[in-house]
Figure 1: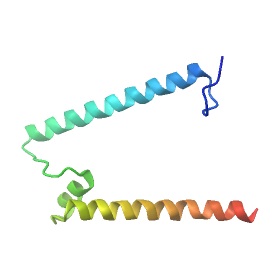
Figure 2: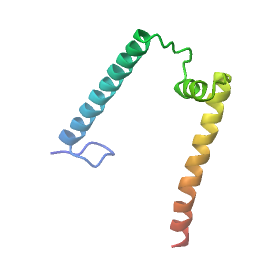
Figure 3: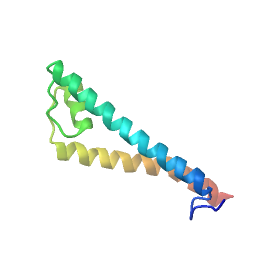
Length: 95
C-alpha cells in the first residue's frame, strides 16, 4: 500500500478520512437546514447572516453592526490563538 503525499497515511486510510469528512459536512448542512426550518415553523426569524451576531443580539438585545461583530470575533480568535500557542513555543525554545 502506498502512502499519500504529505499525510503519512496509506492511500486507503486517507480516502476513508476524506469520505468521513465529506459525510460530516453533509450532516452538518442537513442539521443546519433542519434547524432553520424548525425556527421558521416556530416563528423565530433569523435576521443575521452571522451566528455570533445572532447570539449577541439574542443574549443582550443589542444590535451591533455585523462587520463590527465579525472584526471583534477575528481579533479575539487570533489573540486566543497567540495566547494558546506562545507558551508552547517558549517551552520548545527553552529546551
